[in-house]
Length: 390
Image (cartoon, rainbow, N blue to C red):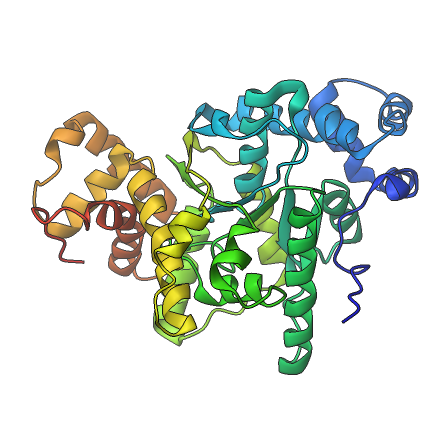
């Protein structure tokens, strides 16, 4: 079957000049340029963006500089573990599959840590992004020039199947033909409730254009689970409000401005400390242990559980989560993980954030605490001594 990637592919060298020229017609690009470069003229920004010969230069000397500035302004400390275990050979590509908390920065921070670890050997990942986030033309151009490929979500059932086949083929091609590593979230949309779980349907999509051999198909993707953890969520107020509306009305209907605000707030809001834990590649040997005489759906579930177990057990747990778990449980199981001063600071933080939204305060407090406590519950579910009443 012939696949047409024109609507979803990221932009390459052949697109660079034309896309940069389009971006330079957008006033926001000059604001971004000055955010990174300081008090420079429009002409200096034009010269800078037109000076890049390839996409890697654009990413390293422009996009990564934006990310470094965001880290400087909104992050107290970023750290990672296991990032230096991967091959430096340009022939080795990986699929990094992470939990999803921040629309733009999950992939950006992963690429930042790869760049810090590998320097000149750095090869950025291609980045999966939903088309619902790309309604503004210059945002779409900037994202695709930053090696983002498009996941089309707004289509009918039959077209969705065709889109999934096309996307599956594109991702497999990027890795098998050693074009680029890939970043993708473990599920569609962020974990708004703090629960990080892998969507089995996503794993099924990965295999759609494979050979239908479970071990071979997933081994070819060189999957690596990664847990990313933020001490503070800059979109917490919006997430609480959205979860409350879903509880009350059964559904929350997002608008394009909601997506844009979530992207902007996620980029520019305070995050405290950030940590990434990189797992080992999911090899043929690991996959073979899941490949018993069982239905395909059960194998997929075992793979999803394997990814989840890594993310849950390697997610960096912050004092805020332990405090929230104890408050919800009305117990002191984790009191050795925080001080009274930390607890008072957290309660003030909750009060300040919930004052930003109108509604049932008790409901908001429960949702706020649950969002923070769920990573604790997930991490400690492998330990029988702890009890969770939420």
